[in-house]
Image (cartoon, rainbow, N blue to C red; front, side, top):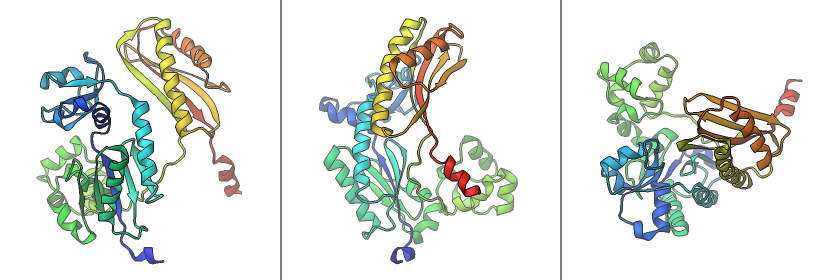
Length: 352
């Protein structure tokens, strides 16, 4: 009963340049140099992330590699090592569970934590969590602390990298007032442009619009906007739900033109998928396996079959089936499994 009277305390934890930071940690000679992690150096490569030294040149995540190299000719472009990133993410997840079971992962390097029930104050608690992560992984993180997910997420951006910022419940109105509307989740370029046409650039200005006006302008999302621009967000922190499938894929720098070339890449993807299954879903029953191809002209096809085990030979069979449907150069291969549903029986019983 004691925790019911406490205000909600949400921490948004964000690892700093996670993939790039791991590469620099593992290769100290890279320290202080601009690093990009991701695609090949040709026209199709796209950076997954980059470190702060690279960002000083205007390089950013999701930027084509050729463009990043134009802005920063000394950029060191490294291939991704997702097996290493997943391993480190698992270590960090284990650390977070020492402090709360209410964890909502957003990606390998980002999560919400509900620490309302923790006996410690949230701001020093976040400091302890970040310190523990650094001590055990030598990786830095940033955190935002607030009474809800919206405020905590925005706060986590304020003192990056390797810092944190707390917004107490009574500080929320002042904190939100001068924030750009783009800081609100759900507002993209189109909505931002529409608001600018109305002379609305900040959350304080958005607060002057009534609920009916916002609904008239943005439909159902207008109801959310009325609350969000005031820093009101009732979304709970939701721990992982069982996923319906697990997959991995790769986009190639040069199209693959033969089935033999595709089979070579399939073996690499198969090893990644098996590692993922062992780490994340080792106890789940698999009902289907599938192979997805995207061709050079961006058309797609998927070969899927129930009752097959996730073996390399079975994936090869599906790959051949998908490849002969078009026999065109292949731009992307994806493979995956689908899991058995765990709730239908109980759901039906509830209806009786």
